[in-house]
Length: 215
Ligand SMILES: [Zn+2]
Image 1 (cartoon, helix red, strand yellow):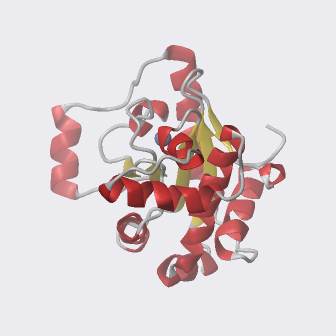
Image 2 (image 1 turned 60 degrees about the horizontal axis):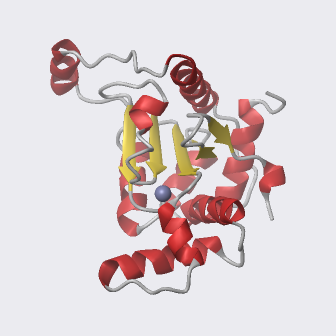
């Protein structure tokens, strides 16, 4: 990979917080381990992670220490634990259609960062996202779904191409992390890093969002 995880986190941090953040080696290690888990998933198409009663009992007794908070789409083809070869207690996952950084999603991320001390926040969009497709269309959905699509539409911005729309929506969610003083404070102290990624539902590959993807 041409870009180091530190560069990716630095850019993700700048995008989220609009400033250069101090290095966070723990976030770098967490991102590397997630990508290694994804490489394993792509190669073997199975999840070797610990799912036994032993790990259930241990985490029930000792509590959870997840490696990362992951906000991703609710799409059934985007299962984060399988994608990253992760088991019980490893990922703090927040999901909704279109990976929108709603108040509930941001509050959950703040909880994971401030109380569970996750070093990494990863927001992951995906190819072929139905929520983004719906946001690109003029058709209006009734009810809460209509409100959700309207939020995704804000993230999509002026994009017409579905892939660019997915990236814009992802970048918007990343940028919105900057509204959180809790996250900003942790990032300022080098305790938290941020990254964005796009998941390919055909290949199983997670592609980290790079600076040149900006539009
Ligand atoms: Zn989706």
